[in-house]
Structures are given as C-alpha cells and as structure tokens.
Image 1 (cartoon, rainbow, N blue to C red):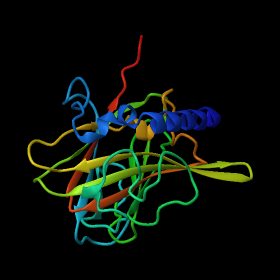
Image 2 (cartoon, rainbow, N blue to C red):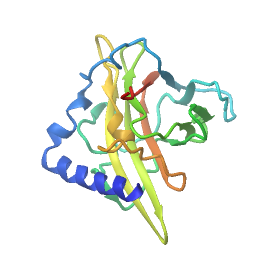
Image 3 (cartoon, one colour):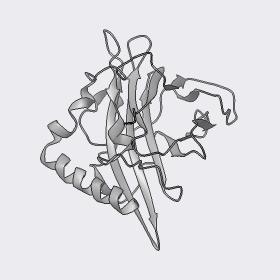
Length: 232
C-alpha cells in the first residue's frame, strides 16, 4: 500500500504544479460545512492557542483538546500565506529537510477504532500527538478557525517514508486557517490525510506523518472527523 500512496502523491504533485487553482480550490475558506448533517456523529478535536499553561503531556483517552502557543515561530506570517505551498516555501512532493519552526502534531494509527490524544500539550516542547483509525476512506475531515475574529494558523502536512535502507520526506499539502470577519468558514482537509485512492498517509506505523502548525493569534482551530458512509 505504501508504494500506491507514494505514487499517488507524486501524481498529485504533478497535477498541482500544472493546475494549482483547481487542485487547491478549497483552501480559501469558502468550503462546505462538515458533512451532510452538521450535528451528525463525529469526533471533535479542538486546537487551542494559549499564552501559558501548566507543564505535562495532558494525555487522556477521552481528551478532545490540544494546547499550542498562541503565537509560534514561523517562516512566513500565517496571515500572509495563501495557495498550496508550505509556510517555509516547500511545494508538494519530495523535500530535502523537514521544518523546524512552528509546532509538530504527529498523527499515527490507533490500535482500534478510537481516537486518542497521546500528548495534548505543545506549549512548551512544541510537540503533540494523536492516534486515529487508519481505515481506507475512514473520515471526512474539516477544519475551521473559531472564536472571535482575529488570528491566523497554517497547517502543513508531511510524510517521512521509512523504506528499507532509504528514508524519503514528502510535503503533502497546506491549509490556511484564518479567522477573519463574518462567520467562520469550514474547509475540507481530506487531502492532507488521504491520497486520491482513500489510503491514509498515516496508516503505516513505521512511517512518520505529522502536521506542522504555525500560529499567529488564533485561539481555536476546530477539527471535525465525520465517519465516511459505507455502501451496503
């Protein structure tokens, strides 16, 4: 499956380079609301920007919150970024180095059909971790900047493919989560987690898949995971 995922990612990279406007049309904040039923069954994860908070992992199987700095370091001010490229300028595809600024949210496969917050505090060590089910076409994923207007956050997805004696690093995609005036807008973020065949980038436990987050004043990013309906 790994070869299929990486081949698909390379194809998507070529498509993105030829037609960026089409491939990333959903990144401007005008996407649909989550699911056909906004209040239907889903897992809700809140990314909270904080100036200060107690130390510790804050891990709890029933936890639905992760704390990050209200203002992180960044390469480019998140309020100034648009389009498909990463905050540090990476374009989708193979990269030579991983980002060091911002905070890292590692996403890995859970041992069952549940979500787990393994590390819910990135304020001090710039690292958080969750586990989620890795079934094919498992979830429709939406993100939104909530709360009072103001603040911007960038989400960049990366995959480190550990294969045999070689390790290859990929930048998958980017989403701007900006809380501007008016009502909060939802964006579909499926392409950050799944390839076009529905395979989860984070499914292989030997690989390292993560989101790099850069925050400038956003107090709440909400992520909703809606189970994808199964046929029959």
